Image 1: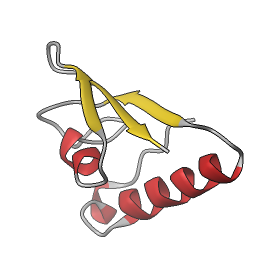
Image 2 (image 1 turned 120 degrees about the vertical axis):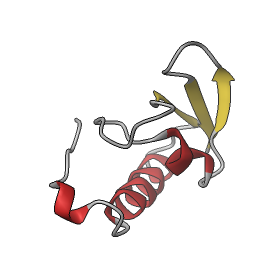
Image 3 (image 1 turned 135 degrees about the vertical axis):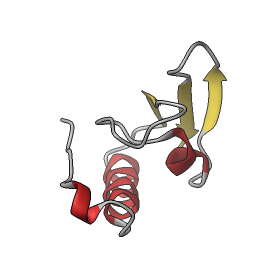
Image 4 (image 1 turned 180 degrees about the vertical axis):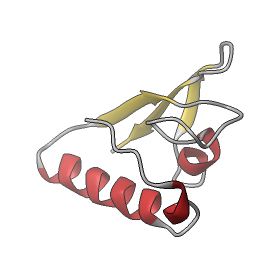
Length: 74
């Protein structure tokens, strides 16, 4: 389910907190990995900017166009 925050709240750490909570929940439920697509050049998309994920140890699996596939081993 995508979450889109009001622009007034961008850059305040909400995306980081939501991502950390999601990772914790998935680990607790026994998931082994998390994959998503992230836009390279824009923070204004539902999945978040690529830089957010790279800061949290996601690795680029397939680097294609503007939306690379990224993965985090849990």
